[in-house]
Amino acid sequence: MSAILGLKLDVDTLRGYREGVPALLDLFDRLDIRSTMFFSMGPDNSGKAIRRVFRKGFLSKMRRTSAVSTYGLKTMLYGTLLPAPHIVESDPSILRLAAERGHECAVHAWDHVEWQDQLDMLESRTVRDTLHRAFGLFERVAGFPARSCAAPAWKVTEASLEVQDELGLDYCSDSRGREPFFPVWGGRRFSTLQIPSTLPTLDEILGLEGQSAEEANRMLLDGLHEGINVHTFHAEMEGIGQIRLFESFLRECMNRGVRFDTLGDIAKTLPRESLSPCVLEPGEIPGRAGAVALQGKEWQS
Ligand SMILES: [Zn+2]
View 1 (cartoon, rainbow, N blue to C red):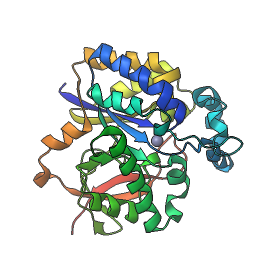
View 2 (cartoon, rainbow, N blue to C red):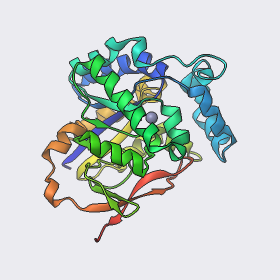
View 3 (cartoon, protein in one colour):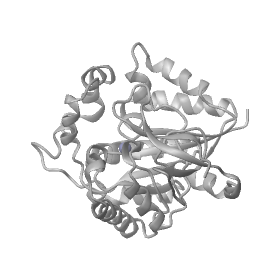
């Protein structure tokens, strides 16, 4: 099978950044793999995410995925009982090390929790400011500008897509879908290429009733197809508690001849002229609470 797999890391929290990223860098060095890493740049307000407890299905999912052991109790209080620490500024050398070791590095968010829980309510000016703040800090820390971003929780709005176009990015990875496409949101066509995640995340699989960790890897491997695949993983999960499981997934991919590529390299080699515009719209996916941006059908203008 000639499958290409883009490994897309989301760094959501301070703990994921400080503990998960260094562990993943060592793992990737050992396996000689390059990934794409998207960093939450600003405050870790994870404690505020507790608001989500009141949403349907969250509590049972918390139990099944043991959120406290994944995230740590301290993380679950940031921005509430404990002040929100700043993620990248707490130790800029980690982001720089990731870039030095050959991983593609880019922006996930300024404030992950704000984006995930409030994007729909934010004015376009605030969306613009928050993305500019994240890109500004990224460039100051990395010494080069970020060329892409990936929206927290696969949440987009017209404003967020508009700012991405203004930034002139190489691509964005904000959505869930089948293959790279140009997004049409609310009837409006945008110019920034979308490279969607094609596989479920580990927390989604474990969030399904009766799925064990071993079965999760089998499900992921079964989901690989010819051509471009993208798998989103998390510094808080695959970088810490589930790192052994993740390593066995990667090794099995290698056994099957899967080729790893960064999303940036995938974007470079795509024949852009022949890519179809597709509808991008909110929709539900199994194992995840709340709507995500889904690749819909091909768009006929
Ligand atoms: Zn995230």
